[in-house]
Image 1 (cartoon, helix red, strand yellow):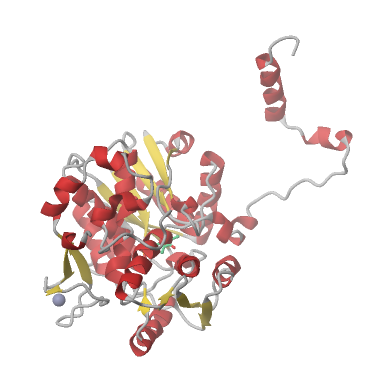
Image 2 (spheres, protein in one colour):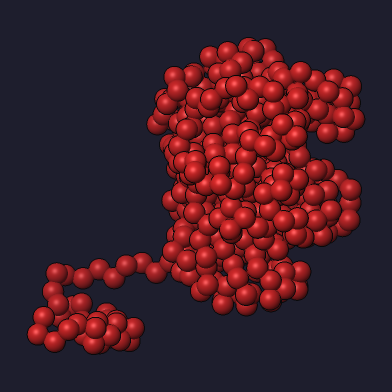
Length: 428
Ligand SMILES: *Cc1c(COP(=O)(O)O)cnc(C)c1O
Ligand SMILES: [Zn+2]
């Protein structure tokens, strides 16, 4: 049905064209392949009004996603809130700040549900019965859940030292989960061999060109939720470096299609100090990253030492006039609690990385005090609870008696009670 809207795959280095197929690299130069669209045919099919009339999932942007037919996996994914955060903005000293909250994405509470919905729908179009992934945790959760829902067999490989919640939140769906003693890069290399030997559809390996396109929907939603305009600044976490490039691609496509005015925007990348190959490249003005051999950070979801899209992520940041910042383990935990206390949003460690980086970018003046910024929160704090456990006050334990409760009431409690009394109509 939308077949004609995709021209094929194209090498991001040499531009060589390939027909649509489960292949992620150019056979000439090993450059990554990307989906190539026919934007002139797409232009008349979508408008702000048409999009407004569609259900609020990521699939409202289906003409800009690489499926031939209707999606068959992850039909409810996307449409997450863009939350104004005035209390956090005041705390950080910027004019306007929004949280794009993919911590509540359906079904597995991270932005990975977007990429998996596209990759597994495409896997079914290609006729794969068995799928898989190499994962730092969230992708494992999402592939397992969405494969279970659509009756695909799934083989999932992760570094063996992942958080308990991410392990449990994968095996519960019945996926075959393998913990590998090694880094993510070693897991990824093994998965490349497995995909080739067994002919399976690995979402972030041979299906990667299609998988990656799902991330664009986070960018489209930000623009639509701002009332069809682009924000001045976006801060985005980076692991393999794919999401940040796809948010940028989304903004470029919306401008090209006339859905937003082509105003200027900057995109900034965030990584953990214990694994920051892309940020280090930005800070040193290197054209591309140098791999980190032994990642060491509590932000395990971002711990990719040799990011597949590192070169392109660094380029998109530079081209937009953005910057990169990193966060130590303690800065990550502090930022997670700051976000929770000022916005009511509990993000995972990656969210702590992104907010901590945002704070540094504001302090450096790279994000101006009068500017507006969207902070991308990509995963849920319930999956990485240990990161903040030590920072939080333990609850007071009392017997069920009012006398034991009374001494616990602080000033704010008394004030709230008075305010409530003033609001109560007399005699009620
Ligand atoms: C995977 C992941 C990212 C980054 O994804 P890339 O596209 O590989 O850069 C960011 N945040 C969370 C929580 C993730 O799981
Ligand atoms: Zn090439």
